[in-house]
Length: 207
Image 1 (cartoon, rainbow, N blue to C red):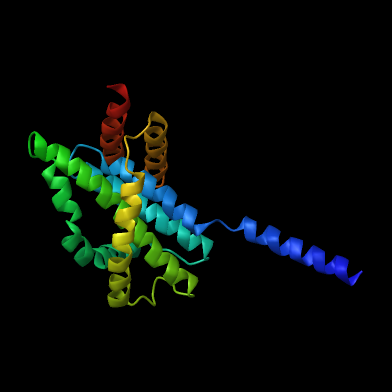
Image 2 (image 1 turned 120 degrees about the vertical axis):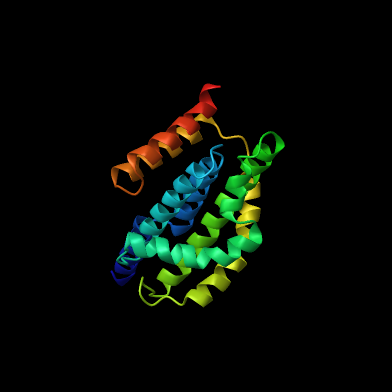
């Protein structure tokens, strides 16, 4: 009888663990979304789309750990944590702005932005996953320590993004449009920002 009860407890424990969302999967899903959005060929529009996707990732991670998440504070923290690291890596704005250069500059800009979008999303997700899993919240954050962690995860994120980097399939593009529409519905991005991102993403699959 005792053995039967123990088996039931083990089974219940396994059921509980499978009910909890996999934070690694959340991060990797958003890395994929970010890389598709990072390939939008219009400067600044790509930044808005990638940033919105990153915030959605942090919201989902916070939900897993039952942490109250404030969107505006999340944006401010993410900007502070990523700033220096991205500056040395290439700089998101720099990669985006390169796209406005005719010809080769546009191609190079898109390629670097795709990798940068994926790498920074991976690193940001890993930093907050580690923080939340250690009973951290949105108030007890050590910015300097998280910047160091971000920098260390950024190189790994670059390797992950390069491994995933390929021409987006129509299915991947449509999933990213759906994700941005959901963020638009929540008010994370404006109607104009969503419309601009959607237009450029759909242009990829109608050529």
